[in-house]
Image (cartoon, rainbow, N blue to C red):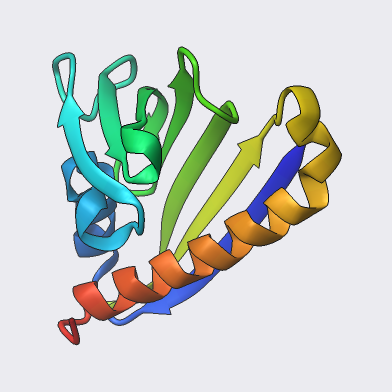
Length: 145
């Protein structure tokens, strides 16, 4: 199993950060390797809603389902179907003041087959990619993008 947590401070109100993160159709704007995201069920954003992401890597489509929502605070999703590495992702937002917040993500994955042998390398790569993504997210939300 791999587990990665990344946290960053963003100079926007927590409601702005959460609203942006909870709308998964924004993912291609800040997540490297995500070409597109589309809701595949209604209502978008509610527990049980599903969406697909087209990834750059071999034009792979990964399907996700929302498993938990704490409105304004956190949203959790898990991959479904034939994901290369089945994952659970929880994004959370905590206010620091009126115009700033802490945004965190925890990614838990279960590599299958021979990928289990590369668990350390996968963890390192996921951490590095996630840190870059959350740097892009920070710049985008703070208007520096």
